[in-house]
Length: 335
Ligand code: ATP
Ligand code: LTN
Image (tube, rainbow, N blue to C red; front, top):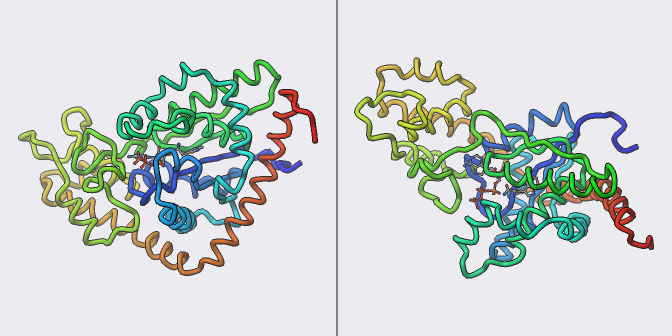
């Protein structure tokens, strides 16, 4: 048995669709390294998902390798978890076709991300954008994952994955493990620094802090960050009345491990002019070792190739077992 140690299995991925930002880091990625000691972990670069929006091929290749280097730089030791590139394991796409036939048009039409992304890409509402959640369900179910650590915006995708798994299991018996989302309490929805009503996202670069950004640029973004127009001007966590300040408190809490109460006490009577650069400094110091290690790893392409080749092999072994079981259940004749 490949999973003789009854460790629970964790799986997650991020699209190599651009530069990794502080939301991606503080939401899901920061929590992954803690998991590799205790669980059987699979983390991948979701390149298949990325082409639902048109990409420049050379950029996509570079971004995929950079994302792998960043995974490792954040603490994902390839000796302790499986790191791979989604398109290197064809079983994801193969399962996805099967699960497309067990997913309803109506349920895909209701997905928030589909509605948002089709509004943003009105000239390219392709079928891949529509069936994106089925591919994501396949990513998860093919590894029989127990838990999926993601940011809050991915909760609905894990829910539909559970629905698809339950539907399939209802017809064919217990083929798939039904996964749980794992969404951190602090940091699961980091907001834009320039528009704290919306989530931090690479499509709004001025309010977005990128992991590989220079310290001076990060500091500038924090110093200019939008705080709230209330007269109180104090550092207090209140997401309704003070969304800008509350977002900075969340970021500071995630970067330093301090509680909201400790942060309020630390900046009591000090005002935003002291608070904003302090958050910037904390982020710069958190990201510095990650940036330096990413740059070092990117200079060693042979090492990175070795990591993703070995990862694909381990991942494919597990994935193909589930795929064979599914093919058998639905009635495909064995070769
Ligand atoms: P886009 O900018 O196109 O919306 P993205 O930045 O959200 O993309 P994804 O690849 O979709 O990037 O997300 C990768 C992971 O980061 C997911 O688990 C997602 O939930 C999480 N994530 C993304 N943005 C944030 C955010 N602002 N706060 C917390 N987690 C986030
Ligand atoms: N849709 C995810 C990326 C993703 C993913 C997955 C996350 C693709 N497949 C499987 C967890 C499990 C996103 O972050 N946009």
